[in-house]
Structure formats: structure tokens, C-alpha cells
Amino acid sequence: MALYEALGGFDRILALTRRWHELCLQDPEAAHPFEHELHPYHDERLAAYLSEAFGGPKLYSAGYGDESYVQQLHACNGVHIELDEACLAAFDRALADVGMTGDPAVKASAYFRRATEEQRAWSGEGAQVPPGLPFNYAH
Image (cartoon, rainbow, N blue to C red; front, side, top):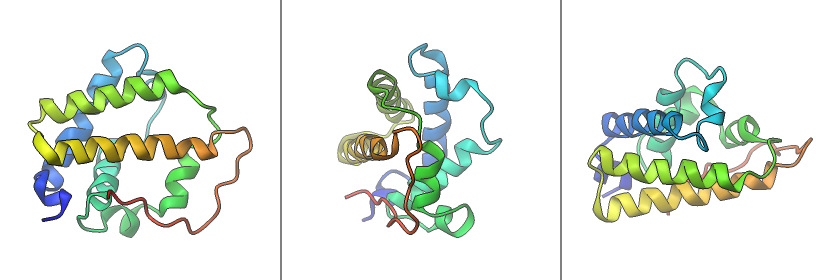
């Protein structure tokens, strides 16, 4: 069974992204990226991305962009370990809050940490994300 199915599918992943966003806004350390103007469907787009990353339908790459696009959205913002750690802690709380537990939650958390840490490759000022990066799937 794909991680996507083990986590409950798109609606549950959307609930996760919405709860994570709420928790980030409640935490002064994690709130910064969410305090400026976000895409009006940020949570839905993130849910589409995570659904695909977790082995579900290719919702993100079919409708929004590829991995290079995602990395470019987050590029050139510097390394911010404290912010990352606060957001990762909020993600783990959101998993529990929406009832995602056990091995699927552990795998989702590990993926989100790895993806967050890998984004640091493009954190430098003027970083150029190469085109055609492969989609970042959970292991």
C-alpha cells in the first residue's frame, strides 16, 4: 500500500496541510513564511504536492509545476535552521492532530524533514535551480 493510501488519501492530506499552516501561524518562530501573501490555494497546492510525493495521483505535476518549480519557489532565502525546525515540529503536531499515527506518520515526517533539508541546496542568494529536477518522492 502506498503511503498516500496509508495516510488516508487526499482529503486527509489536505486536512494535514491546513492544520500545519494553522500551527505555523501560532508559533512566532514558524510564522514568518506564512505571514506574507501566500497563493490563495497554498494548502491545496501543498496537499497536491504531498499526495504525489506519498505515491498518490500526480496532482501537482499535472496541474501546478515540476520539482524545479517547487524548488525555485523556496530558493534564495538563506539557511534558516530555527525556522525549519519550528516548521518541522509543527508538521509533526499536525500529523498527530489529524489522527495520522504509526508507521505512516513516521514516514511522512521523515520525508518532510528530508525535503526541507534538501531545499537548503538552493538557499544561497542568486541560486539557480536547474530545470528538470526529478520529483521528490517519499522513500
